[in-house]
Length: 226
Image (cartoon, rainbow, N blue to C red; front, side, top):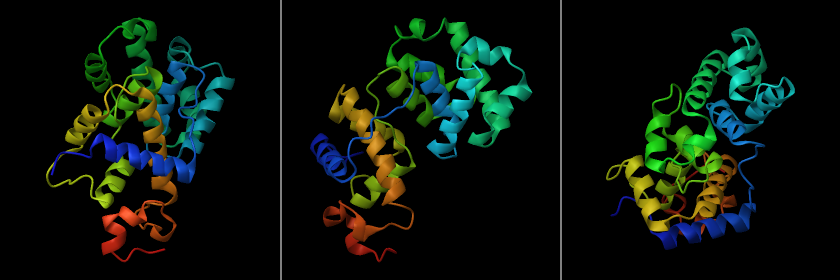
């Protein structure tokens, strides 16, 4: 078994999810910084809560690195409170804003290679692989295959990924190699996987409602709760 699915398998999977859920039109955001902020705020919470925090940042004029760094710690924490764990996230946002400011902003780092960008983002406090890849894909339009809990769960249940034989990094690399530099595909694919993982392929899946059940190994061998 390879580290991940083939390009044909991935494209057929996305076609099925598009038919079931429709285009997701991700990532909402008026600027690259807003998208990057959203990638941190959505950690360990729903997008609804993250969006509420972003709306509060917008109203208070804090969706610029300089403004975010200039406001007080108490103000920032209060502003992003709807996103949860607001003390940690406030610190993470400051670290990201400071890093961006020191690099010269998005216009400066846009010239960097994707590999250099990813390595640098992973050095920023609070930015893990998934957050870094979301920033790369949605804020910087880089062709990145995002591997998150939804993707791992769905692909494993479909029999397209074996965690005993490959790591998430292996999956990320093999899927990117299979698809190539198709930013639009990665954008929509990740959004659809999140939607399907939230609505249908849950930890306790709703297999009878799943558009993938005919080819899903989990659905045909287990007795999931509906």
